[in-house]
Picture 1 (cartoon, rainbow, N blue to C red):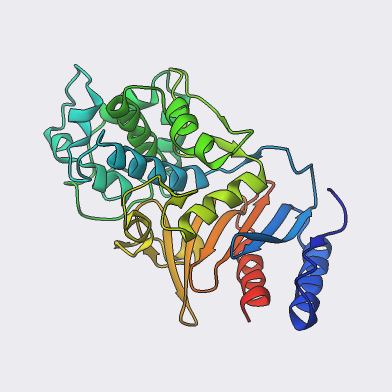
Picture 2 (picture 1 turned 90 degrees about the vertical axis):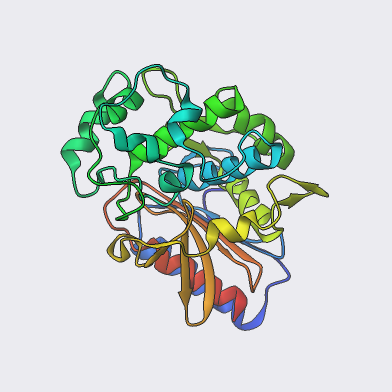
Length: 320
Protein backbone atom coordinates (compact mmCIF):
# COMPACT_ATOMS: atom_id res chain seq x y z
CA UNK A 1 0.00 0.00 0.00
CA UNK A 2 2.93 2.32 -0.61
CA UNK A 3 1.29 5.29 -2.28
CA UNK A 4 -1.89 7.24 -1.53
CA UNK A 5 -3.39 7.13 1.93
CA UNK A 6 -6.43 5.02 2.73
CA UNK A 7 -9.04 6.87 4.79
CA UNK A 8 -12.16 5.24 6.18
CA UNK A 9 -15.41 6.29 4.48
CA UNK A 10 -16.70 7.12 7.98
CA UNK A 11 -14.42 10.17 8.07
CA UNK A 12 -15.74 13.30 6.46
CA UNK A 13 -15.94 17.06 6.68
CA UNK A 14 -13.29 18.94 8.63
CA UNK A 15 -11.63 15.74 9.90
CA UNK A 16 -11.09 14.50 6.34
CA UNK A 17 -9.61 17.84 5.32
CA UNK A 18 -7.23 17.79 8.29
CA UNK A 19 -6.11 14.25 7.49
CA UNK A 20 -5.40 15.17 3.88
CA UNK A 21 -3.38 18.21 4.96
CA UNK A 22 -1.39 16.08 7.40
CA UNK A 23 -0.72 13.41 4.82
CA UNK A 24 0.50 15.98 2.31
CA UNK A 25 2.75 17.63 4.90
CA UNK A 26 4.39 14.35 5.88
CA UNK A 27 4.95 13.30 2.27
CA UNK A 28 6.42 16.70 1.44
CA UNK A 29 8.49 17.52 4.52
CA UNK A 30 9.35 14.30 6.39
CA UNK A 31 11.10 11.81 4.12
CA UNK A 32 12.10 9.51 6.97
CA UNK A 33 8.53 8.60 7.96
CA UNK A 34 7.81 5.07 6.72
CA UNK A 35 4.23 4.45 7.90
CA UNK A 36 1.39 6.28 9.61
CA UNK A 37 -1.77 4.61 10.88
CA UNK A 38 -4.63 5.60 13.16
CA UNK A 39 -7.71 3.96 14.58
CA UNK A 40 -10.68 5.15 16.59
CA UNK A 41 -12.82 2.90 18.75
CA UNK A 42 -10.84 -0.10 17.52
CA UNK A 43 -11.57 0.61 13.84
CA UNK A 44 -8.86 1.50 11.33
CA UNK A 45 -9.38 5.08 10.17
CA UNK A 46 -6.19 6.06 8.33
CA UNK A 47 -3.37 4.04 6.78
CA UNK A 48 -0.43 5.24 4.72
CA UNK A 49 2.87 3.57 3.82
CA UNK A 50 5.50 5.97 2.57
CA UNK A 51 8.10 3.21 2.31
CA UNK A 52 7.65 -0.53 2.30
CA UNK A 53 4.53 -2.68 2.49
CA UNK A 54 1.84 -3.36 5.12
CA UNK A 55 3.26 -6.78 5.97
CA UNK A 56 6.82 -5.55 6.42
CA UNK A 57 8.04 -5.80 10.04
CA UNK A 58 9.21 -2.38 11.24
CA UNK A 59 12.12 -2.01 13.63
CA UNK A 60 10.45 -0.52 16.70
CA UNK A 61 13.56 0.35 18.69
CA UNK A 62 12.57 1.29 22.27
CA UNK A 63 8.87 0.66 21.70
CA UNK A 64 10.10 -2.84 22.60
CA UNK A 65 10.43 -1.67 26.21
CA UNK A 66 6.72 -0.85 26.41
CA UNK A 67 5.84 -4.28 25.02
CA UNK A 68 8.09 -5.70 27.74
CA UNK A 69 5.92 -3.92 30.31
CA UNK A 70 2.87 -5.74 28.95
CA UNK A 71 4.74 -9.02 29.23
CA UNK A 72 5.58 -8.27 32.87
CA UNK A 73 1.87 -7.69 33.41
CA UNK A 74 1.10 -11.00 31.75
CA UNK A 75 3.56 -12.80 34.05
CA UNK A 76 1.91 -11.17 37.07
CA UNK A 77 -1.49 -12.30 35.82
CA UNK A 78 -0.24 -15.87 35.46
CA UNK A 79 1.36 -15.84 38.92
CA UNK A 80 4.88 -16.25 37.54
CA UNK A 81 5.68 -12.95 39.25
CA UNK A 82 4.11 -11.88 42.52
CA UNK A 83 5.09 -8.23 42.84
CA UNK A 84 7.06 -5.47 41.18
CA UNK A 85 9.00 -5.21 44.43
CA UNK A 86 10.62 -8.63 43.98
CA UNK A 87 14.43 -8.45 43.83
CA UNK A 88 15.47 -8.83 40.20
CA UNK A 89 18.62 -10.90 40.73
CA UNK A 90 16.83 -13.45 42.90
CA UNK A 91 14.60 -14.16 39.92
CA UNK A 92 17.48 -14.27 37.45
CA UNK A 93 18.99 -17.33 39.10
CA UNK A 94 22.65 -16.65 38.30
CA UNK A 95 25.34 -18.21 40.44
CA UNK A 96 27.66 -15.21 40.06
CA UNK A 97 27.12 -12.53 42.70
CA UNK A 98 27.88 -8.92 41.67
CA UNK A 99 30.67 -7.28 43.64
CA UNK A 100 28.45 -4.26 44.26
CA UNK A 101 26.18 -5.42 47.09
CA UNK A 102 23.60 -2.79 46.17
CA UNK A 103 22.54 -4.96 43.25
CA UNK A 104 20.65 -7.15 45.71
CA UNK A 105 18.23 -4.26 46.33
CA UNK A 106 17.34 -3.72 42.66
CA UNK A 107 13.71 -4.65 42.07
CA UNK A 108 11.55 -5.09 39.00
CA UNK A 109 10.03 -1.70 39.76
CA UNK A 110 13.44 -0.04 39.73
CA UNK A 111 14.20 -1.52 36.32
CA UNK A 112 10.81 -0.49 34.95
CA UNK A 113 11.06 3.10 36.19
CA UNK A 114 14.73 3.46 35.18
CA UNK A 115 15.76 4.12 38.79
CA UNK A 116 17.99 1.07 39.37
CA UNK A 117 21.16 3.16 39.58
CA UNK A 118 22.51 2.13 36.17
CA UNK A 119 24.23 4.58 33.83
CA UNK A 120 22.20 6.04 30.98
CA UNK A 121 23.48 5.23 27.52
CA UNK A 122 22.08 8.56 26.38
CA UNK A 123 24.55 10.45 28.53
CA UNK A 124 27.31 7.81 28.52
CA UNK A 125 27.65 6.54 24.93
CA UNK A 126 30.89 4.72 25.75
CA UNK A 127 28.93 2.50 28.17
CA UNK A 128 26.33 1.88 25.49
CA UNK A 129 28.95 0.84 22.96
CA UNK A 130 30.69 -1.42 25.47
CA UNK A 131 27.64 -3.36 26.64
CA UNK A 132 26.30 -3.79 23.12
CA UNK A 133 29.69 -5.10 21.95
CA UNK A 134 30.12 -7.49 24.88
CA UNK A 135 29.86 -11.25 24.45
CA UNK A 136 27.29 -11.37 27.27
CA UNK A 137 25.48 -8.05 27.78
CA UNK A 138 23.72 -9.23 30.95
CA UNK A 139 26.99 -10.29 32.58
CA UNK A 140 28.55 -7.01 31.47
CA UNK A 141 25.84 -5.02 33.28
CA UNK A 142 26.06 -7.01 36.50
CA UNK A 143 29.85 -6.84 36.64
CA UNK A 144 29.85 -3.06 36.96
CA UNK A 145 28.97 -1.03 40.05
CA UNK A 146 25.81 1.02 40.23
CA UNK A 147 26.12 4.78 40.18
CA UNK A 148 23.97 5.05 43.29
CA UNK A 149 21.59 3.07 45.47
CA UNK A 150 18.43 1.88 43.68
CA UNK A 151 15.32 4.03 43.88
CA UNK A 152 16.97 7.39 43.28
CA UNK A 153 17.67 9.20 40.04
CA UNK A 154 15.95 8.45 36.72
CA UNK A 155 18.50 7.41 34.11
CA UNK A 156 17.13 6.03 30.86
CA UNK A 157 18.80 2.63 30.53
CA UNK A 158 18.77 0.21 27.60
CA UNK A 159 20.95 -2.15 29.61
CA UNK A 160 18.45 -2.16 32.46
CA UNK A 161 15.56 -3.04 30.15
CA UNK A 162 17.60 -5.83 28.58
CA UNK A 163 18.39 -7.17 32.04
CA UNK A 164 14.67 -7.04 32.88
CA UNK A 165 13.95 -9.15 29.80
CA UNK A 166 16.42 -11.77 30.98
CA UNK A 167 14.89 -11.70 34.47
CA UNK A 168 11.39 -12.15 33.05
CA UNK A 169 12.47 -15.07 30.86
CA UNK A 170 13.98 -16.77 33.91
CA UNK A 171 10.84 -16.16 35.97
CA UNK A 172 8.47 -17.63 33.37
CA UNK A 173 10.81 -20.50 32.50
CA UNK A 174 10.99 -19.94 28.75
CA UNK A 175 12.69 -17.63 26.26
CA UNK A 176 11.26 -14.14 26.13
CA UNK A 177 10.26 -14.33 22.46
CA UNK A 178 8.44 -17.62 23.03
CA UNK A 179 6.63 -16.18 26.03
CA UNK A 180 5.62 -13.14 24.00
CA UNK A 181 4.37 -15.31 21.15
CA UNK A 182 2.33 -17.65 23.32
CA UNK A 183 0.94 -15.17 25.81
CA UNK A 184 0.57 -11.94 23.81
CA UNK A 185 0.92 -12.23 20.04
CA UNK A 186 -1.11 -15.40 19.56
CA UNK A 187 -4.09 -14.17 21.64
CA UNK A 188 -4.00 -10.85 19.75
CA UNK A 189 -3.71 -12.58 16.39
CA UNK A 190 -0.46 -10.73 15.72
CA UNK A 191 1.71 -12.09 12.91
CA UNK A 192 5.19 -11.25 11.72
CA UNK A 193 6.86 -10.53 15.07
CA UNK A 194 10.66 -10.71 15.04
CA UNK A 195 13.08 -10.11 17.89
CA UNK A 196 16.83 -9.51 17.39
CA UNK A 197 19.04 -11.41 19.84
CA UNK A 198 22.21 -10.73 21.78
CA UNK A 199 25.25 -13.05 21.46
CA UNK A 200 23.77 -15.32 24.14
CA UNK A 201 20.52 -15.78 22.21
CA UNK A 202 18.44 -13.47 24.42
CA UNK A 203 16.06 -11.07 22.66
CA UNK A 204 17.13 -7.45 23.03
CA UNK A 205 14.28 -6.45 25.32
CA UNK A 206 15.41 -2.85 25.16
CA UNK A 207 14.91 -2.39 21.44
CA UNK A 208 15.08 -5.49 19.26
CA UNK A 209 11.42 -6.03 18.39
CA UNK A 210 10.06 -5.67 14.85
CA UNK A 211 6.34 -5.76 13.99
CA UNK A 212 4.21 -4.78 11.01
CA UNK A 213 2.52 -1.46 11.72
CA UNK A 214 -1.01 -2.89 11.69
CA UNK A 215 0.00 -5.43 14.32
CA UNK A 216 1.47 -2.76 16.55
CA UNK A 217 -1.86 -0.95 16.32
CA UNK A 218 -3.53 -3.99 17.93
CA UNK A 219 -1.36 -3.50 21.00
CA UNK A 220 -2.84 -0.03 21.39
CA UNK A 221 -6.34 -1.49 21.14
CA UNK A 222 -5.45 -3.87 23.97
CA UNK A 223 -4.59 -0.90 26.18
CA UNK A 224 -7.88 0.84 25.39
CA UNK A 225 -9.68 -2.29 26.57
CA UNK A 226 -7.78 -2.39 29.89
CA UNK A 227 -5.92 -5.51 28.82
CA UNK A 228 -9.02 -7.42 27.73
CA UNK A 229 -9.11 -9.21 24.38
CA UNK A 230 -12.08 -11.22 23.13
CA UNK A 231 -13.37 -11.56 26.68
CA UNK A 232 -10.02 -12.71 28.04
CA UNK A 233 -7.83 -10.80 30.50
CA UNK A 234 -4.23 -10.75 29.32
CA UNK A 235 -2.93 -8.59 32.18
CA UNK A 236 -4.23 -7.93 35.72
CA UNK A 237 -7.08 -5.45 36.17
CA UNK A 238 -5.63 -1.97 36.51
CA UNK A 239 -2.26 -2.93 35.02
CA UNK A 240 -2.70 -0.67 32.00
CA UNK A 241 -3.39 2.30 34.25
CA UNK A 242 -0.44 1.43 36.46
CA UNK A 243 1.91 1.16 33.46
CA UNK A 244 0.85 4.45 31.97
CA UNK A 245 0.47 6.70 34.98
CA UNK A 246 3.36 9.00 35.98
CA UNK A 247 5.80 7.31 38.37
CA UNK A 248 8.93 9.44 38.03
CA UNK A 249 10.14 12.52 36.22
CA UNK A 250 11.96 11.45 33.06
CA UNK A 251 14.07 13.32 30.52
CA UNK A 252 11.73 16.01 29.19
CA UNK A 253 14.31 16.81 26.51
CA UNK A 254 14.17 13.26 25.23
CA UNK A 255 10.56 13.00 24.08
CA UNK A 256 9.14 16.35 25.14
CA UNK A 257 7.24 14.39 27.81
CA UNK A 258 8.26 15.01 31.44
CA UNK A 259 6.67 11.98 33.12
CA UNK A 260 7.65 8.31 32.91
CA UNK A 261 5.55 5.34 33.97
CA UNK A 262 6.50 1.67 33.81
CA UNK A 263 8.44 1.63 30.52
CA UNK A 264 5.80 3.98 29.07
CA UNK A 265 5.80 7.78 28.76
CA UNK A 266 2.80 9.52 30.32
CA UNK A 267 1.73 12.81 28.74
CA UNK A 268 -0.94 15.38 29.46
CA UNK A 269 -1.17 18.12 26.85
CA UNK A 270 -4.03 20.60 26.69
CA UNK A 271 -5.79 18.42 29.30
CA UNK A 272 -5.52 15.42 26.98
CA UNK A 273 -4.01 12.25 28.42
CA UNK A 274 -1.72 10.26 26.15
CA UNK A 275 0.20 7.04 26.66
CA UNK A 276 3.34 6.87 24.54
CA UNK A 277 5.61 3.99 23.57
CA UNK A 278 8.49 5.58 21.69
CA UNK A 279 11.63 4.49 19.88
CA UNK A 280 14.68 6.03 18.26
CA UNK A 281 14.10 7.37 14.78
CA UNK A 282 10.44 8.29 15.17
CA UNK A 283 8.79 5.01 16.23
CA UNK A 284 5.54 5.70 18.07
CA UNK A 285 2.59 3.88 19.52
CA UNK A 286 0.35 6.52 21.09
CA UNK A 287 -2.91 5.77 22.88
CA UNK A 288 -5.43 8.48 23.78
CA UNK A 289 -7.92 6.88 26.17
CA UNK A 290 -10.52 9.66 26.27
CA UNK A 291 -11.06 9.71 22.50
CA UNK A 292 -10.31 6.06 21.82
CA UNK A 293 -7.72 7.06 19.22
CA UNK A 294 -4.56 5.01 18.64
CA UNK A 295 -1.77 6.28 16.39
CA UNK A 296 1.21 4.35 15.01
CA UNK A 297 4.12 6.05 13.28
CA UNK A 298 7.33 4.42 12.12
CA UNK A 299 10.44 5.89 10.58
CA UNK A 300 13.92 5.30 9.27
CA UNK A 301 16.29 5.87 12.21
CA UNK A 302 17.48 9.46 12.39
CA UNK A 303 18.26 11.85 15.21
CA UNK A 304 15.45 13.93 16.72
CA UNK A 305 12.74 13.53 14.08
CA UNK A 306 9.62 15.70 14.64
CA UNK A 307 7.35 12.70 14.38
CA UNK A 308 5.52 13.24 17.69
CA UNK A 309 4.08 16.38 16.17
CA UNK A 310 2.52 14.14 13.53
CA UNK A 311 1.04 11.93 16.23
CA UNK A 312 -0.55 14.83 18.09
CA UNK A 313 -1.85 16.36 14.84
CA UNK A 314 -3.38 13.03 13.88
CA UNK A 315 -5.10 12.81 17.25
CA UNK A 316 -6.49 16.32 16.94
CA UNK A 317 -7.78 15.56 13.46
CA UNK A 318 -9.71 12.52 14.68
CA UNK A 319 -10.76 13.71 18.13
CA UNK A 320 -11.44 17.39 17.45
